[in-house]
Length: 113
Length: 112
Image (cartoon, rainbow over all chains, first blue to last red; front, side, top):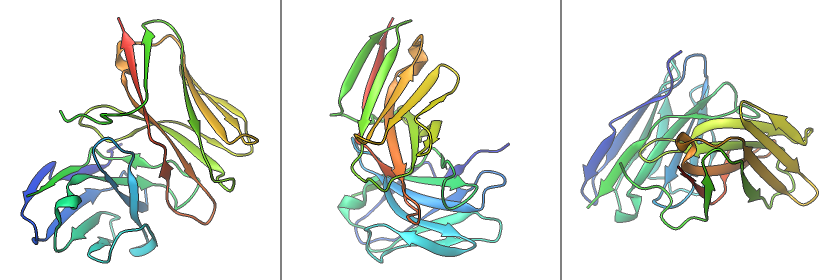
């Protein structure tokens, strides 16, 4: 059974640029969620995708957007990068949207300079 | 790897002893709870979960206790090993709300 994989592992961008992060969900999982983890804090919910549609969103601005593909893989896009966007971005997949444990990848470390 | 949780509550336990990590939650509607372990440079790793219709659940060397009256969750790790050193997060979810809300985390250090 393949776990959640994310790419790239590290990324350095300049303020104002755009970035795309990718995630392959665990085999058999149809739900993907994205979280942002700042240094020293717990992960914060960005949004969830189920059946290729956004199924819930946290307190993040519209410049954070996502996609889910028919094979349940997902992308997180961030436009107009700001310095505060520097964080570890985690993707998690689950069997269902609720009452099912989320299994996380090892994240993408994004640094905005 | 990078550091996770630079200013977290810390707990140091002698190798072989049992450890208890506590978590308080505020949402009385929360009905699903998960404990995660996060090592430096890695994503959170699922340890054990519990639903609100239970007050105790056991796994391999781990036990989760849920007290809904006082909104408190604990993780007990038996016979701790050096590999148990990590940051531990509790997380909660409520029906109709898709997000997991994470606690602040506790850094557990096992002393050889």
